[in-house]
Amino acid sequence: LCYFCVRHRICVNSSKEPNHHTARRRLAEPAHSSKMATVSIEWSAHKSTFVEGEMLRGVVVIQSPDPVKYSSITLTMDGRVSLQLSAKNVGMFEAFYNSLKPVQLLAGSLELRDAGRVPKGRTEIPFELPLKARSGVELYETYTGVFITIEYALRVEVKRGLMSKDLLATKQFVIHGKPRPVDIQKLDFVLSPSTLKKQPTKAVPDYLIEGHIDSTVCNIEEAFSGVLVVKKSIVPIKSIELQLVRVETCGCQEGYAKDPTEIQNIQIADGDVCRDVEIPLHMIFPRLFTCPSLATDNFKVEFEINIVLVLATKDMITENFPIKLVRQVKKEKAGF
Image 1 (cartoon, rainbow, N blue to C red):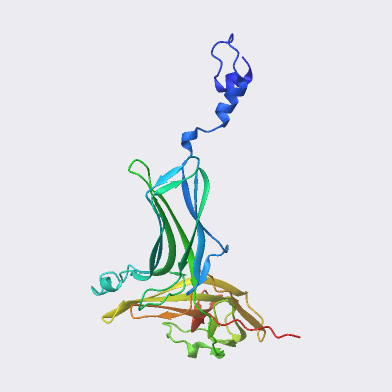
Image 2 (tube, rainbow, N blue to C red):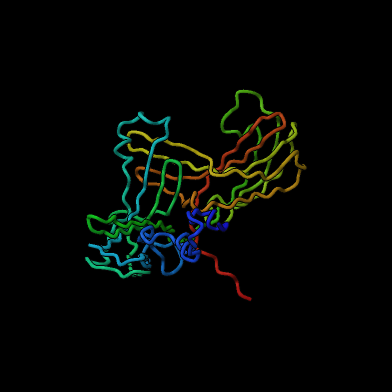
C-alpha cells in the first residue's frame, strides 16, 4: 500500500489500484450541499458615518451556489435610544420603568423586490433610503454608554418558502450631528486643599497647583488641552492623571438616577515632578464612547474632566471640571 492509501484508508485490498486523482479530489472538494446562500449589506460610498438629511445608498448582496427563490426582500431602518438603571437605583422609583422604554428615533422600511428568483452567484440589489427622523424627534449622535445607548442599523430580510430558512443581515451605521460654531471658554484654575469641593475626613498635605484649560467647550473632533504647573507639594508626588468621566442621567419628574462612570484615564506625569514646570494636558475623545453633550426630558449625557493627584502617601486628591462637548464647524486654513 502507498502512504496516501494508508493515511486516508482508501485501499482495502492491495490488489486493487486506487484512483488517486479521484480520491484526492473527493477529499479536497467540500460537499456541494454544505454551501448556503448568504445576504449582506454594502455601502456605495465606502463609509459608515452619515449626517441627518443624507441618503443611505448601498446594495444588498445575495450570494448563492444555486438560484434562490423568495417571496419578498425588505430593508428596514431603525434607530433608538436604549435606557437602563444601574443596580443601585433599581426599585427606587416605579415611574422610572415607564420612562425607560426605548425611544424610537428612526423608523422606515423599503420593499426592494416582490416574489421572484435570483440566479446563482452574486446578485446586487441597489437601494436608497432618506435619513430623516420621525416627526417630533431629532436624530442624536451615535453613542455607546453604560446606561444609555444610541444606535442605528439597517436590516435586510429575504423571505423564502416554508421549507427554506429566511436570510437575514444587519449593518450598523454611525450618525454625526451637524457642526455648529462655538465660542472658546478658557478656564484658569488653582488647586489646593482649600479649593476641594468635598472636604476630606482627614487632613490633606499642603499643595498648590495652577494652570488653565484651553476651553471648557470642547470640539469632539479635537483633543482636550491645557497646562498645569506644580508650585509646591509638601509630600512627594507619585503621579498626576487626567480622567474623562461620563455622567448619564435617566429619569422623569418624580426623580432622576445619576451615574458617573470612567471612560478613560491617562497618566500625564510620573514621579515627583519638578516644580514650576509646565505639564501639558492632552486627551483625545474616544469616538464611540463620547457624543456632544445631550439633555432631554428623560435622559442626559454629560462629561467631566478630573485631575487626579496621587501622593507618595497613597492619598488621592481629585479635582473635577465639567466640560461641554460639541461638534464644531471646521476652521478654514489660512492661505498664503
